[in-house]
Image 1 (tube, helix red, strand yellow):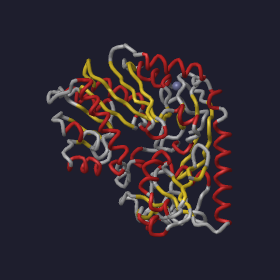
Image 2: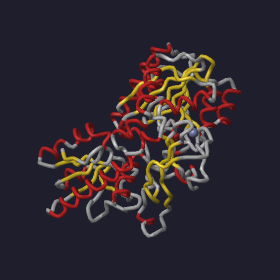
Image 3: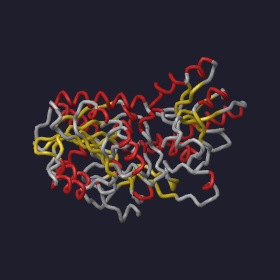
Image 4: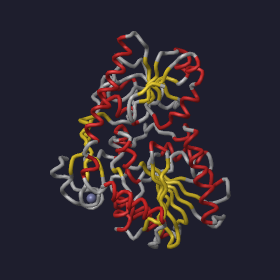
Length: 409
Ligand SMILES: [Zn+2]
């Protein structure tokens, strides 16, 4: 769809303004099997645009969810210790803050392999996970988290509500920005939530994306890039109100929203809305310099990597994550530069990065091969991965961190 035909995913406004055009790229999470290397690889335009009406940054193209989240979808969240700890803390705080008991009911949308809901199960609180990927639901069931394989929207929500299964807490982490029917998803939350219930929603914060040049978090699965201003418009349209809001460091900078059916915003919300107003986040001006900074990053990273290769250094990458696909494909980092991409996830090992077709190998290969440099693709996990690869660093190995400015540590 071209910019001229598109309307805003949230408010339907027809005149969207370009922020960044990343060209036509392969799907960031579609790691290839050896048998697929010679097949045609589907690719789609990737352009971020801004809605001057409701302030939402979004991408134009919507790839069919059945193509994006097929049975090979490789993301098993439990592979990140940091994410596990983040979820556990979130749940313990909510159990206390909301006084949850064995009579409460907690639902998670995009419940993945059940790692978050498991914390409620451990406290005797009934839960239901909803996730479109059957393999993830099966993994969740295995650890005692009841799950249904569905795309969440109004239909699923009204069916559950009709069965008397409204929720005290609804978790929706890193999913609101990924769903094709944005309004249907939020209407579903409104239908599924008890009158005094609370939805706890997390997603990356567009302000961190722009300020820290995190362009690689833009990919086809990630349709919306919310500010507090933009999500406030969306929620109010469905009778939901943002009453508390925290900035979190996870995923390069995220927001955690606490949403209820009564309009009673705490100072955290009014302060963030005022900050955004002062920054001009509701105008295209805030986003104008971004495209130029992304081009600068591409140039600097290319110069750094080519320079190291010219000196005869060996370079590999760590972390076969979606943002890594965006980065290597946009910057044009191929097999001539990277020998392999190492990853702990056994579901990705033996496969190949989309687009550049770089082989994905077990993480142990970094210690075994001792390359000179490792390009860290999931830079948001810098602390965790650098600690994990301490032996490699002790022997003189260096990491290249690409964002916000390429640098060596
Ligand atoms: Zn809009």
